Image (cartoon, rainbow, N blue to C red; front, side, top):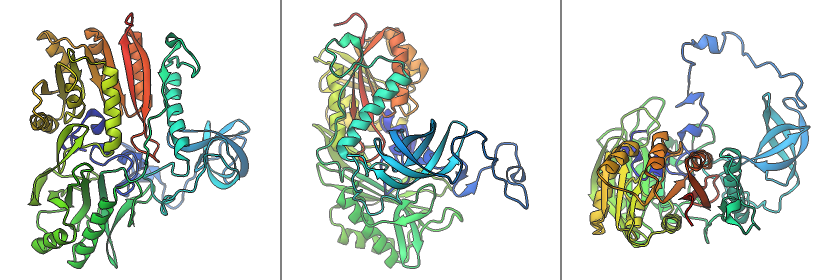
Length: 536
């Protein structure tokens, strides 16, 4: 994916979720294209480097791996096991005579009958056949296509259960990967370890997504669009997604209907032919404005004026209709060229009191309600009095920077994506905030240069991609020794790893708050507050 498509805060560049979006049942499998089987790319087999296809699959016969001797279970065997936990993919974890089995759809505390499907030396995978004893957290998934779609992974778990599990997932990573001491819930002395607060959830954890990215295919009945079936590029048509805003569903349905009427062809990723690749819809929750982006395999659109006219008539609240041209045979949604077909080139929305201009390819958080919660916790942990200098090390389009600027004396934001910095500067002007400075570059290069210029940070905020902070940035933080570090994370494992480095360098992790940005998926955001040791 190009940097242009990933412009946004660090977290927003971290996965296809910057432009592909996390938790998007109508876009693709979660969390990103990398979640698809690594042996496939666009439906084609990938050969190991330096190996011929015959070396991978001999002619005339199909080779199966030899069974592993000495395991307590064998392939296709049925057994009853207790589920003792759930892994980061949302699979139940059970034991069969000490041997670990991962079971999709099973919940902690359940007794289940399973069929062993695949075995490895240390663990295996099994299919859920029967729930012998159900968990108190088991619920019926309300989505009618939940079993087919890969967008949500834990709809079969109560929302209270989801929030508790996400908190425990963060704790497990802090302890197992970071070797960090987490404070017991009833402990009163904060020096005993890190306080991990309950996960901050939503009052209404449905219909929270403000952006839909829908791949388009074709059947005899016309255009279809919805989601990729699990582990494939086969598009399953969908009328409604329960985590999408209702208006997004309505726009996608109308575009499919109108496109079919005018005979618009769908893109075929195997042949590289066909016009319409994706329909992208953005909804501004606060202002109500909507943007429609037609991603096409070429610039020319048959019946363009008639098509736009029909869309405007059917969907009067759409304020912007854009076209993005992507001729490449790639899984990346957006191409480099975007043009306005009708209306404005941006729509406007607010997070808190800060206004943002949202263009076709600029990033904007997909759950605006929880974004305000996440940023509010970030500002709280920064402990600002109005006199501080703050550095936002992965500032993206300036969303966190502008929040911080309302409470700080000066904020400096750095981001490696030039287009994101352009958006950040525009958003600062839009809000008439003059105590914010943005610069393009890698934070580990720019921040030391700022230090040489005499800029000393009281607080450094980091919001890195899923891979975590660059080691050189961590070294830079330890050299600058700000009073506080606020770490915003979308990946508990890399959060734990980086906190370990900062703790070894002289910081103490005081508190971590998980935030549920993507209900009914396995993803969890966290905000961590660190203080330089010796501070009260």
